[in-house]
Image (tube, rainbow, N blue to C red; front, side):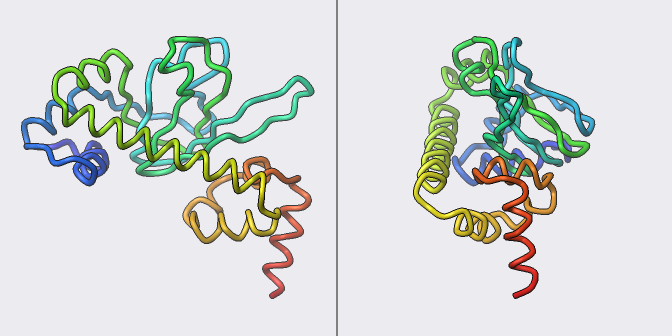
Length: 196
């Protein structure tokens, strides 16, 4: 019987690769369930990010802090998304970003050692991780290009359209940072939209 906390990950995996019941159960057995409190960090600079994290419930924000103390949001993650400092995770280097819970959350954590073992054990597992990496890379490139080439208003409207479940779950300053604008400007855009 599958632990209900693992059902979101099981569904996520099966949407990407066909696995037998035994293959799926073995893959899931390599993850550890972790409950995270709001405002708790799961990645911090100066420490190695030892896990990639699948969000079963809750919301997270990944961000960096630059020399003047200003922070920049790199990624959000809600249910059915992954989050970590991937450079730290894959290269066993100190993390350069923070990943913090925006809500009480439940995550399933996979260590690099277990991921490597899965990839070597079965080509289907390797296919799953390759598909995940390709999708993540495409997403981040699309976000980077949008931030460099589109107006602030377009970026905001596009985010609202693509991610309606996130907008009200993240602080306004974090969303503004992610979209490459000031909090004040985001507030103006929201007010303008509300009066339409």
